[in-house]
Amino acid sequence: MGYGNELVIRNYNVQKDRARVEDLERRCEVGPTERVVLFTDTLGDPICRIRNSPMYKMLVAMFRNELVGVIQGSIKLATVHKPPKDLAKVGYVLGLRVAPSHRRKGIGLRLVRRLEEWFIANDVDYAYVATEKDNEASVKLFVGKLSYVKFRTSAILVNPVNRRALRVSSDIEVAKMRIEEAEFLYHKFMDSSTEFFPHDIGNILRNKLSLGTWVAYPRGESLISGVKVPSSWAMLSVWNSGELFKLRLGKAPLSCLTYTKCSRLIDKIFPCFKLSAIPDFFNPFGFYFMYGVYREGPLSGKMVRTLCQYVHNVARKTNDCKVIVTEVGCQDSLRFQIPHRKSLSCPEDFWCIKALKIEEKKGLYELTRTSPTARAIFVDPREV
Image (cartoon, rainbow, N blue to C red):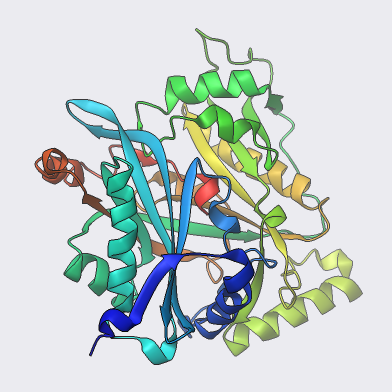
């Protein structure tokens, strides 16, 4: 049974709601038992994950003075390849939480609908959400009740940062690009080939959390110019998510915990073994997010791996950076070139989409039927 008029949904108020939202987040920490589960620590700022977005909102659900649910959303202009236009206003739904004792009573449904009202009031064309395929309650809510349709699947790849530097191939040049160069290349190579490519990529690259953009290419060849590119090359950017919030280990199989402790002990006592030790995940830690990964050419896989090794060596100089995260399409061959630890990664995330305008609903079928291998997904670091 629902709560009727007794349930009040309103805007988040930092003075009134911060502590109660943090308490709700802790009570909602659940996850599959067969693998490691990483949770977020917002450092006292529940809205930190979307604070850098062009437009954002957080709603709370109140029942008899108890905070029983929250939801967040952001709005931006992005590439959505559907004729007759390729640029659309999209609203991202995230952070939906309902108190365990108040579930199955329609609170989540009402929170999403209220957020969609905000999207519609701001002329949003599409709403989208990402959720784990194993989250049956979330899939049932968005697909079964709210008419979202499966759009893409992605893999969240997580790789530990070890204390030893990785060897970077001497026959590959790695160079940091100027922001203007990176912005030009992203528009040239990713705007037309990537779903959800942000129209304001320049703002992302200029954000203080964006540590830079690097390009890799065979040593001896010329650096990318406006006309000519090397025979094989790759580029990526890095976002310091650890400055916004931390991750921490929620739970893990006993075998994983045992290996973590043993590998670190062996690495300390017998460094000559060069065992790949898993960092200490038992306290909150920071992480880097790699975004805008792009590559071309027959040796581009090697270029991507070299960039990942380079980013690893940068990350190890940051005190609390314990993992490097990226997200790519499940059908994208990039996932086989990016180093990651299977036990820490999420193999399949569902991206679901919903048209909020009548004219967009007519073309949604065509959009969702585009082959997942035809275009990559650009994961905005402001929405991680």
